Amino acid sequence: MTSEWTKARPNIDLDNQEFWAGLREHRFLLWNCGGCGAWYWPKAYCRFHENQPFAAQMSWVESSGRGVIHSANVHRTVLDPAWKEDTPFTYVLVELDEGPMISSTLLDYIEDPILIIGRKVGVVYEDHLDIGEGFVLPKFALLDS
Ligand SMILES: [Zn+2]
Image 1 (cartoon, helix red, strand yellow):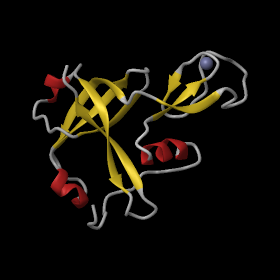
Image 2 (cartoon, helix red, strand yellow; image 1 turned 90 degrees about the vertical axis):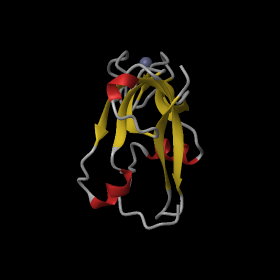
Image 3 (cartoon, protein in one colour; image 1 turned 60 degrees about the vertical axis):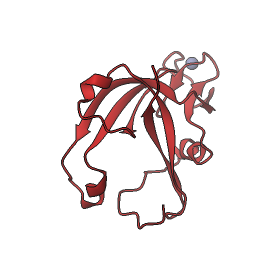
Image 4 (tube, helix red, strand yellow; image 1 turned 120 degrees about the vertical axis):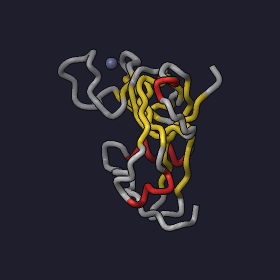
């Protein structure tokens, strides 16, 4: 993509910069507990260990990038002119195979989103490396069930 980017850019900060760096390498990282194996997104304390320093046993670990659609809706109204060409689009809340939930755009436009609840999806990497310092957006695509 070389056209001018007029949409909001991702909020990349100290707490999520490793996640976004992983996306640049087309790796879908989740926050993982080395003590018990629990997965998180975004960054959090592991709920299974009390009174530990933040991130004591935690690190970003590559995940499957796959999950199941937990909820979905269709955005039909253009609230920001930058989204005019992308609207309507289907937006999904995905329960990742590792457990955490994450939401993003579904590449496939589905007019009736209730039909895709429970369908399997996989992450797709949308490169925008020529915009500012560059970033990659994680979106989802339906997988064969
Ligand atoms: Zn843990």
